[in-house]
Image (cartoon, rainbow, N blue to C red; front, side):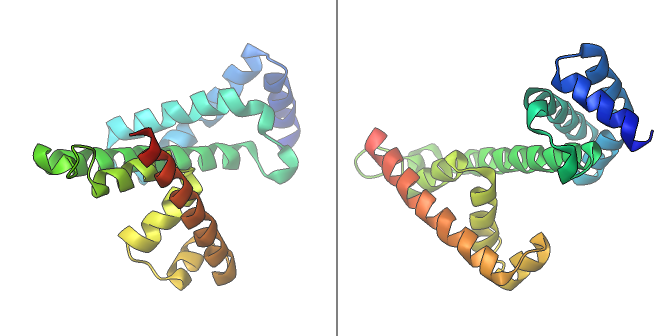
Length: 179
């Protein structure tokens, strides 16, 4: 399908046309699913969940799609990547918490221990900040490696990390105050 008819379909979907949205779904589902299958290393159930969440998210945010910023498929694949990262982080946190004996979940005053607080705080951060902090401190990537992986500059990654650490500190404090 050429760019013009797809632009008309996107415009129709943005105006609330179910038939336009259905046609966009049919045009792009196979490609999005294949992309999700690659992201999940062939785990079909997780790929299906990721693809489904991608289209639910896209349907909710279709008004925010701007054709001058890229193709609709590229926009969908970006959503798929973010949904996958979110699901992967959630699964990692779940497995991590399951591996810890229950008494270690409590700090000295009976509240959550510091490790649990850190993971809870990470879960509350925007995806971009969480991913940057996980790359730097959990995966122990250098700023240069992070810049290469994200196609950005070292300065941009350093700035992102500064913002992410600042947000982490404020969310961590807020989480402590809620206890």
